[in-house]
Length: 281
Ligand code: ADP
Ligand code: MG
Image (cartoon, rainbow, N blue to C red):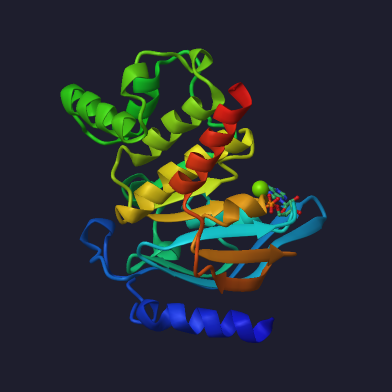
């Protein structure tokens, strides 16, 4: 297993290895190259009273642009902790994280927030939509942190909602939408700032299987358009749509393999539709 990890990482690292340091580059000036994420010996320890929880125990991981990575592993293996650090929502206890040539560890809180808003879109299992606001307003939210005009905010949000096929539902409230539609609103919200990466933590965990594949179809389309996707899932069927599989156990990566032939969600959906049709007949 160890040989696999290093051989796969070596292949991936060939571009990412070009990134060195980057400490002096401020967020807005980062040059974009193929090595998007470079993580080295990341550790995260939570202090729970007298007890220390070692959620991550030395994770090294590189991602180049346009990858589609599925992260798997048992509950408690450190996946969400890792995603939170990747998404600049949390800082590691030790180790380095370089994102687009920027050493994230050296950034202030404001700079972290800037990077997060500019480069990363988040999708969560529970959708995390504001219930008293429309689909459109939910998608507009990240733009309030930038000085985007009201008009542009609306235009960009409608454009993002179109990308997920929800242009007919922009004035609906979350409780007027199905689970799949709510997750698509959340994906539109993740896209509204044109991120280079979308991070999704169990995005299909609350959805039925057909709706889950529809969500994967959207992620595959976004990936074809050049967005890097990193998603956590515990469903092997969902991981089959990704191009690379990483398995966590006890805060470490124990397997890292390419998936040479990912399933195509649009094709799988066609077969499901025909089964549905047969059932109706
Ligand atoms: P996963 O997403 O794979 O289920 P997590 O990253 O959520 O795993 O958790 C990894 C470990 O860290 C678990 O033992 C969990 O209890 C612990 N943990 C996660 N978040 C916190 C926190 N905020 N404070 C203390 N312990 C935490
Ligand atoms: Mg989790």
